Length: 442
Image (tube, rainbow, N blue to C red):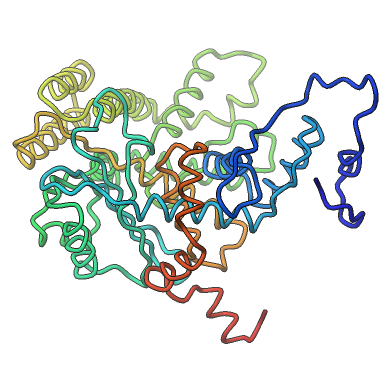
């Protein structure tokens, strides 16, 4: 039941405490199981639902509490809504449980995905996910539930020596790593080399770097993107604001050129159709015509790249996927920079297959760890001053299906003191704690 205090009630909350009236429609009533974890007052279904809301959606912790109030009113559940701090503890416990679970130890059995985050406050977060080699299903891209969290740790900066230490400790737990998927960050690259772990370069970053080499100093590309930026800045409040080009990324611009080429192609079509209903727009966009060849080239390039990534991320690098991708490039890439792309991709496939010769099929995408960082960053947006905290344990919680059985084990086996001890070792003093200590606030 909700608290009987009237202060702070939400609209309709008080009515949830009233008994059902005779003849009242109960078609919306939902029964919730009453199984509970030891020493926990909330039913497991409520706890699992709360954790699932947070890990699967961008819902804030405080919103989850309000959602339960709404569900109580609509479905007549009669359950106390958990506070935001309670949900926070549940997620940390679940993440810690997944991170600290005993992992299978076997040399050459594990493939790891490793990356360090962008700066959060004063610190960076090192995350290592692992997947057992025989559990990689080469019919879809690697997802969260395929993975096990192996390392989550925060430092001011991650040097190669620091990462080497973590890898050495990790191999002591799970055995010699078969290969690692990562970008070309200098520290990670050096650490993997020092540990003699085969480094498979993430295909998304490789293609991005290839596109940067092809177009960074290209005069037509620089002119096109420069005029797009000027148009967006100068006409954002004008009569052509509805046809403005997309916002260009400041960092990692070459990760995706598709928005640029899609907009350019749409504008070229608008100009070619010469529709009298859009004369004003056509006059304002006439400058695009001089970049027709570039836009067509980017359109072909994006089509080929998207197809290559779909095939490789789902099926891995093997003889038949390499043949298919090179054949796809050959059909479209017959001149200029498109031919250079073909050569670069051929070099990439050969390098990957030479690195891990004993494997018939090789995974080569670290998109999933980028996704984890993105989700965690979203959690911090409401209060970026906090920096990295033990909420980073949520990165571990992403990797396991949330059900009553798993949740019960996590809640019963993990204590709040375990999380506090883990935080001292792996997170240290947070930015917010330092601020409070120095400024004597809170």
